[in-house]
Length: 357
Figure 1 (cartoon, helix red, strand yellow):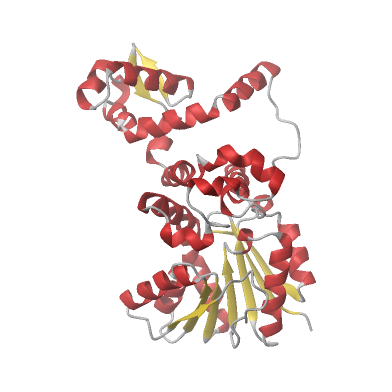
Figure 2 (cartoon, rainbow, N blue to C red):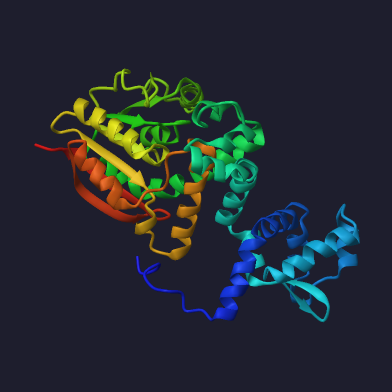
């Protein structure tokens, strides 16, 4: 990670401008969202390099010339647009906001899941509780409520969660099946996407999903719809309840984008319980997006921003971790990392762990 290790090479004048961008960031965010929602960026893009006028845009949208004017003028200041003989024309940042699927997934997640709740970030930091979660529902953490979220919010949450993991599946599956596991325990398997990927890759493997009842209901329905219900099994549990049993007899225990949902003490408890049920030849595979292992600064920015979702919305005490933090917890749980692989998918790291002798 070559970035974050020296001061920014930026003038005081430009640094002051960047500070103003931060001060008005919530306004910029909502302008960008509205430019997309009302199709203004697409309409401007369709006009090509000649650009288009406010009156032309007003003829094709439900917005008044006033409403369009305040949006596109701020779009100029945000670098999304530029003026070509007084015609509004799409610039490079606007192009990627319009066409980059990662930007759209992140924007929808931020708006639908996080935006209102982040107003309570200050209280969440002080109390160690997700005070912003009340904007979505009445739960202590977001996880029991995932299956109950309003459809648009649920859609944005799962698209965000799956976007990053799905990009890793293709390269992960051959790695996971190197040791020819017969029984995979998917810890925190959510809707069962990994279980279905495994059963699709190998027609003999059995997968047990450990999760809360709401998530398991969806996962089992998905397994039935995929025709693999006889090979995908449910293990209902609350992984924060240390009195509940941990699934045994797994050849490979799988934790994908899972441990970042817990505090350090909770992670240690989960890993310790997993280690206790592992056989000497069992393997624990952990897939995470560590901010310090990102190949590009944009990835580290996205990962660190996601930590604040956990702080204010999800649970109040977890985050996207530095790899050294998790490596320490793995060792404390009685495990060691047998193989450490970076740059999988969109900045994922795979840690293959075994029990210490």
